[in-house]
Image 1 (tube, rainbow, N blue to C red):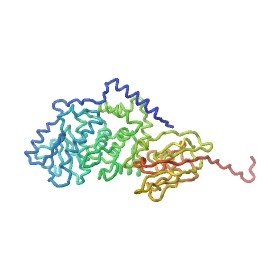
Image 2: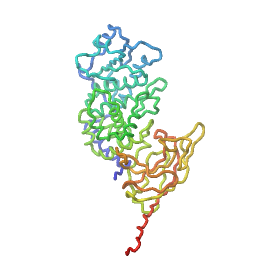
Image 3: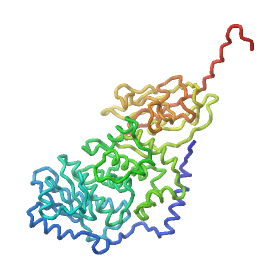
Image 4: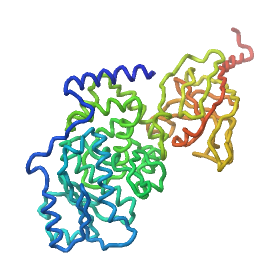
Length: 462
């Protein structure tokens, strides 16, 4: 059994924060050390080389973008340096860096439809110093990306490599693969609002991140039983190729640690320290780190993950509760994810549920929608009516794979049998990104069902 509480989370992460703050004198904002002479590539020299080669150049304060792509109205390429500048400010904020302390920092990005003009100009090394990459690669504060046809994905790739340039030079990043690629995915994921960069670590809509496919990749891994656990992600090996499942899992692990209320403060403290090869070891050895809790939170996250996922409303209080020996009641809030009932069963034990009440489950145009425990057939989510009451246990599903919440009962009334020893958790069926628009909840009664007495065989003496 794993039990957490807000008080416990605050106490051990607070202790870690005080420990680190005392060791490094942690301020509210830090001044990033300018990279040593020679650590940065001379962007001015690269820009001059590109001009001599007749390549197209688009510049901003923080980015010189070189491309062989012809100018086309509406393709968004001219806006990329400005968007990069806006993203740079977000990256500084993430790492508590004052951008005024790095006024001269610039990156050079090569957006390539054809690699040959860049090779011929000397802008793409052919001496084996960089690997044969499929989509993009970063070397200090210069990077290359193969031009994709989709504007949203082009922006994402540019910003992904931009995060690498930022962290490699301003934070001396040399971390394990899961963090190196996970943080680049996390800080690059965005949407445009009125044409401006807006960070959305968890994409709100699929249309905001066309062709990115990280959430869809996690779903496919879950469906196939191949989803990695958190320890597996931490052990992700480096690869010169763009491995979508590995990138998706690294992004998911970083998103969990950065966004989940049980882990976000500790992760922020971790990121304020060295970003080196011992990052994972320091995380796992930090005061109060609970590897079992983090692993379970990660499994729950990858199981329920969807666009707009709300960490605060989906965070789970892992409490198995008391054995269900008599009728017990609980309230299931509509605007939360899985919630402990306070009752538990042994595998094979039988119980009954009866639910009453109505809950607000969003809107359809100008109409407020309400649902009973049976849900509303006006809209379905993951194969069940929206708002339908679900009862589950945390277990390894019969088809195998990572643990998850396995539904054992649903609706307004049901008799069910426990599939494992442990607590009963309940929620209303809903997309996790829409929970903020729900209200009210349902009253649920849970009662044990006595096992039938074994029948006496004819002639048997007892």
